[in-house]
Length: 362
Image (cartoon, rainbow, N blue to C red; front, top):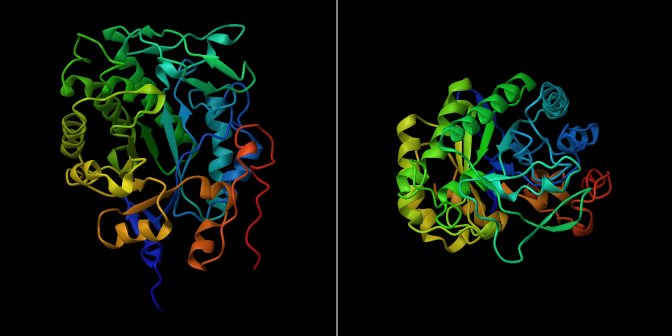
């Protein structure tokens, strides 16, 4: 069979102990706000993820490990048995169609806007520093655009409790049948890694080693549940989302990656760089990784395929292309045109612009 510019994306890959992917095309986590108001996944979510089971791997939307760690009223959670039972229906829908699915677990830290609820849930963070300037957040079912407030700084003794919440979510994910979990080291973990949101003077602040400590404690707690084969981590070095600033980026993430490598081979490490195509930082950090690498940076499919063919990456992350193209792998393999995303329906709830995108005509 002749090779195409994307042929390398259709080579199988074994992850962890026994998970075999038929292709390297990964649906990365994307906020879609279709859960119930208490964070419970819905039947509509099972339909949505099931439609996209042709992906080599699905990573779910970011899912909170606690009530205070949520950002949206209709974003999903994984901290109650009810959450796990509902997620099990999503997992079953994907598995019944031959797919594989990993739960992305997260805590949003200071990017929590739930203080506007009738019973407020104030945010926590490394330091009592609000998101600065005029930054705003999409919020569903409460004022659409609202300012962030000053978070409460976590006490030193509280930080390990956050790691325990990530571990609890992992146990629930295993119960629900997920093929793994991905720790989202953005948001609260990123706030600890940063130098403008983290002004702590205890063991979690100051040096790159101290600012990376919280991420490693979360990783240790999560891998203790089912081992490193069950765990991936998403890193966003130097990303400025939610007004994050980072100094000593290479030192901080280099230390973090060296410590991860010393702990054993994870399922994969997921790098997000908005400038992936030109990022010398990615190429420098990639050399410190032990195990498979997922790259995510809005590249063209052929560019991802070239990185896989060259050994720079093992997996290619696709985001909004999967929203409008539930059959994205077959479209790429057949060089079929891709449908466009309706940006007006990304976060509004309901089936429109969620489960209504058709597959390509046979």
